[in-house]
Length: 282
Image 1 (cartoon, rainbow, N blue to C red):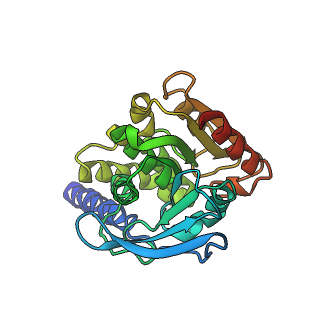
Image 2 (image 1 turned 120 degrees about the vertical axis):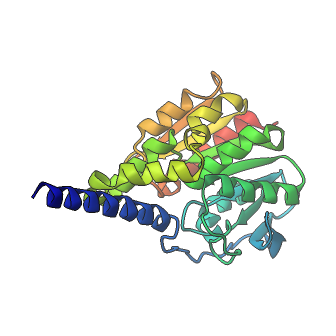
């Protein structure tokens, strides 16, 4: 009887390990949710540029009427595409900026790429900055915001201002929060092991790419934008992130009654963007 019990427990343990390993693979392959929203201002250039490691990225470059004040690069979040950033880009376009929006690899109509993650998103931002060839205002949403932090830490001279919408503070904490929010049972029984597997996949480097870890090396004006009712990453992520940047460099805008992706729809949002740019650009 004892041996049977040992076999059952051993088999259950092995099944659990294999199941969580499969889940760790699956979270990288979740169905994409692209949206359709074409730019409706300025002169739209629709092109493709070479991506890191082969393949290509689809890119929109939208030139404003008259002389451009500079370039804003906007990076979308997980499962989305360049169209997701059109509403945000429109505000910068009305301010006279050239806006550049790309779809990360394995998103939209950019080239497929297995196992995308925040550092890969950052590589794609770097590819776009290479193509632009001048310092930019960099705006990222969700994992695009994390990627923007990674790129700003790596190449601060290429960025004038940094905008982080829906950005988490610490990677492991954020993943646990995300998985628990999606499914309570999954979060309770599988999330910690899935995050452990992901840490193994990335050579125990998840903590090293936490925005709070990288922020101290980014001496730029930063605007942190966060939804008051963000269930993926609650607002304490924004406050923790603000305190991680050099003193006086980061500001926080908590958009009332908005979730993870709707801060840009809040009525005060355009004014906050304009005033931040006005304070920090000549």
